[in-house]
Each structure stands twice: as structure tokens, then as C-alpha cells.
Length: 229
Image (cartoon, rainbow, N blue to C red; front, top):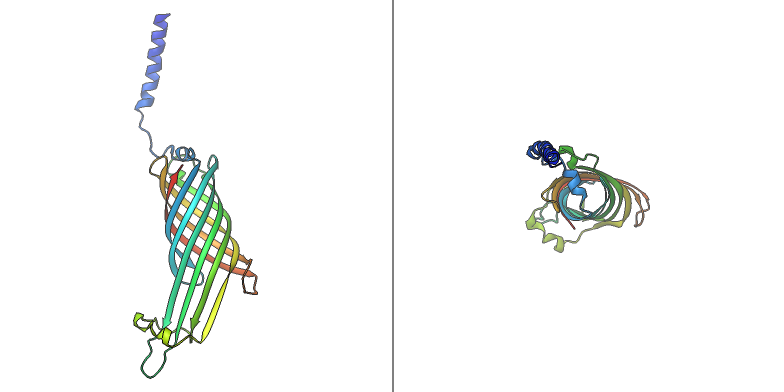
């Protein structure tokens, strides 16, 4: 009996040693390790472009919760603001024309994120879609159509010569979005990643614009950091 047990132990040891010596791919179990953490808080910094023109910085905060293997629910808040001035400096004998445009977008997203790959390099990819609510403030002030970029030394002229035309709007807009992430784990609790996303704004819910159908879109790219708990 003892001899049989000893021989069985040697056979088991011989079977386990090759497995222990086998080199492990660090990306092999990346998806499984990430799914063990149920909640994550994240921050992101990126660049946003809009169909209305111009690019601006994008700040984001996210909360993510794993609900199933490879399935996450994400709630995010994003903020972006942009302004630009056009015109030419006034001379001593005349008042030059100028125009200023500004926008401010505050966006709330609810997203379902899917991680379809469980191992290897592809396990870092996440694909998501969901609903978007965006609060928009935008407007223009000026005296005429834009001509040349406004120089900083001409800004006092805006106080001396008030604008003759104003246009301002605000409201809540509903739409949808698509997101593509690539997540790189630094540890079980911390990861970084890259995100590209597009927002498609379709319907004005509130605001002073009589047109309710609001076809607009934005696109952005950002880098994020998340911490699990």
C-alpha cells in the first residue's frame, strides 16, 4: 500500500512539474482577472470634435459595474467647452467688426459594455452602446460675419463697442452613442485604457428652438484611468 502510494505520488509529481515550468502568457487571463472586480471608478482626459466645428478638451468621470462575465454597465459624465473669436482690431477712425462663438456641452451616458474576448491580446477590447442625454449651451455675439482671427490686444474693444447681434440657445437633447475601449491592467485593481466614442444627438427635449428634431454629432478620443473597489 505504501509503495503504491509512493509510486502514485511520483506519477502525480511528474504530471505537475511540466505545468509548473510552462511559461505563462501575461495577457492570457487578462479578461478573467478584470472581471473579478465588480465596481470601478474612472477619470479620463481627451479631445472632442463637433459637427459645428472646432475641437476642445474633454473631461470625463465614470462608474462601471460588472453584472455578468464579459458584461459591464457604465454611467459617465462628460464636460466640454469651446469658444472662438473672429474679427480685426479697431483703428482710430473706425470700429472693426467682430464675432464670438461659444458652446458648452454636459453629457450623461448610460452604456452597456461588452468584452467578447476572454484571453490574449484581444481581451483588452470593450465595445459599448447606449443612451445619451446632453445639456447644451451655445451662442454667438458680434457685429458682422467673421473675417480675420481676433488678436488678444483687440479684446478691450469688445467693452468699448458693444455687439449689435446676439444669438443664444440652450436645451436638453437626447440621442445615442457608440464606444470602443482598449483596457490595459496595471494590477487587479487598477487599469488604464484608450477610448474612442461617437455621440449622435437626435431629438431636442427642451429648449427655445422650435425645431424638435436635432441632427448633430460629436466624436472624441481619450485616455482613462480606473480604480476598482
